Length: 354
Image (cartoon, rainbow, N blue to C red; front, side, top):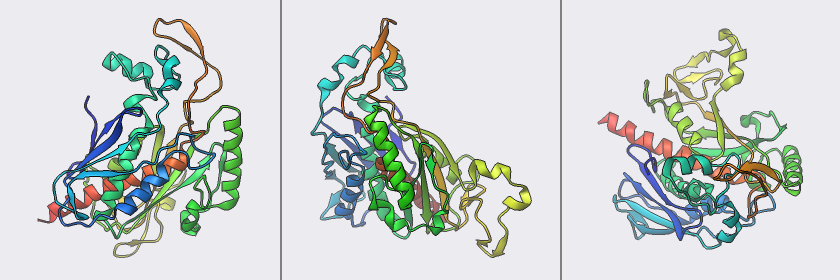
């Protein structure tokens, strides 16, 4: 199985299945001599772990990080950083009835078609449980870019959204509510909406917005390795993601060129930022901001029609513990993938300067 490694100079390879002994990762290309704040890494994992509130799955995992190699007395050695996150609260029996059934909008059929077999327990490797390794890797990568701040928040849930620009929001309030929305009024409506869907055995999708400050001008490549293309690839690799847009995105298509162009007011400073901090695939020093669309969670308790391996029709009611929406726990995942991307491009920029 290929496709388990992300990055070029800073490379994260993840491993493990949802109901296996552990998940984990190997982070290569990490420079020596960097002090790692393991408590900060654990805090990032705590924001992603299950069982945080009524808006998340009831599965209880401590998601405790265990670093196995590459760090000595809190400082990186320049060798591969190996780590694991044990799985301790699997209920594999909940998935017994799914062994020969294809769940709607899951990877069951495609995985089995590609590999000839699959781990039906929680989706195995295709489970979003894998993303905990990304969060750990991203939190470590953040140590390489200490002057860059990556902040994600929930912009919308289902039909409920708010339109206040990020620059006018108090982003310190993101973690003040379970849905992780910095607008208190919108957050309350979102929570009520998700809880009602959970009660009905259904789920909700939505949009996460991410703001990145402190990226200097000059990161990225102008052709195939555009910075926004790398960020898009990173975000689209996250489970349940259906779309990515940066800067003005699709809304920018409704503007005229005279309205959309970011006029320079001084060297390196523009009057507007429709470009989203990236021009020609290269960062321009302005804030980078983008939005990521997440579909509703496919594992719902409402009855659904599907087929089994023999092609016979089956009425399916999925058991187990599932999130009614991925959004609150996806916040640190979006941040982690952005941190991994930016740390990689920082290292690439250093190589170009030699």
